[in-house]
Structure formats: structure tokens, C-alpha cells
View (cartoon, rainbow, N blue to C red):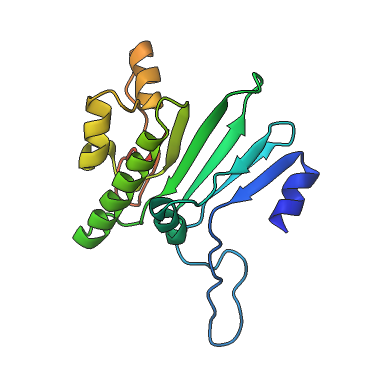
Length: 178
């Protein structure tokens, strides 16, 4: 249904692993009543795009989480591509178990990104952790292997990066990254 709707508006829809609908005792609760997770991409029809093949143990493990997808976009130059990896980290990464799982997934994704070599890459998503609270993200940013685009943009303009997520009792956090 969503793929058809996207098509009507000039987009191609690409989805990560499908999430199963949850059921109540009486009936299904609708398309938004699914477990946490689920990722996807909308790409203009004129841009060549495809999901990357799930051809390694690491990609398979990431795919099975329903929290990761890898899209390959063609460029106007024809011979080159742009890799886009999206991640939706486990919510409430404040608990030790969820934080450890989030960090493990981030490390797997960073391994996947490194395997692409010098190919152009954008890694984005709702990481559900601030970069400074993730050892893996902090190391990659510090070593210059990743760049926080919003932070760099703000630095070039002399401003502070804005929060991306606002909870009930906080001033906001930067857990959504590109």
C-alpha cells in the first residue's frame, strides 16, 4: 500500500526487513502497531536505486534485526554509486542491556561501512544514543573516519548543533545523525 502511494507521488520505496504486525486478543491494531524498528527509503523515480544484496553473515545479521538497510544509488556519472546506510537503534538505550545491543549494532554497521572502502557513503538514522555516549561513534568521529554533518555545518557558522529528539523532561538530545 505504501509502495503504491509513493509511486503515485513520484517516488520508489525501498524497505528494510518487514516487521510483523502485533495482534491484540481481538484483532490487529493497524499498520502502525508493529514492534520497534523498521527502516526504509524513498527515492525519486528518476534516480537509479536498489537495496544492497544480503550476501554476507554481517549483512544478514543486520538485516534480521529489522533496524538496518543499505541502499545503493546510481549517480549522474553512471559509473559510480553512493551507498546509504540507515539505522534505527534500540529505543531507551539508557538501560545497560539495550545500550550494549545498540553499541554492538553500531560496531557491525561501522564494519560494514569500512568494507565499502573509499566508496562514497552516508550513514544516517535514529541511533538512540548521543555520539559522545557511544564508544564506537566517538572513536570513528575522533579519527576522522566519520563526520557529523550537522555538527560540521554548525561549526562553520559559529553555532551549536541543535537537538533532534525531545523527551518529556529534557532539553533535547542529538540522537538522530547523518
